[in-house]
Length: 80
Figure 1: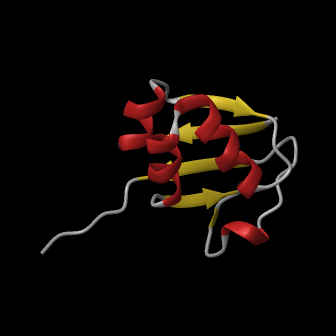
Figure 2 (figure 1 turned 45 degrees about the horizontal axis):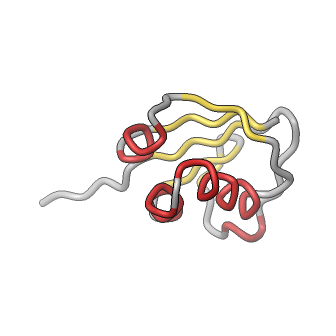
């Protein structure tokens, strides 16, 4: 099971700071988030800054997960 950390909107929508989800890829993980926490959470997850195993995710489809993977969903920061 991958270890998941939620920040910002994802923390609010899931009601959790951490989670463990059994998924073989990041795409599958996002589907599980949608089924578990709803479409709004899935949309928030997709629009987050995603870090998987200490690397910024540039393409969701290319990321494979294993049992010791760590994934973080961070809010996108902007300002002026």
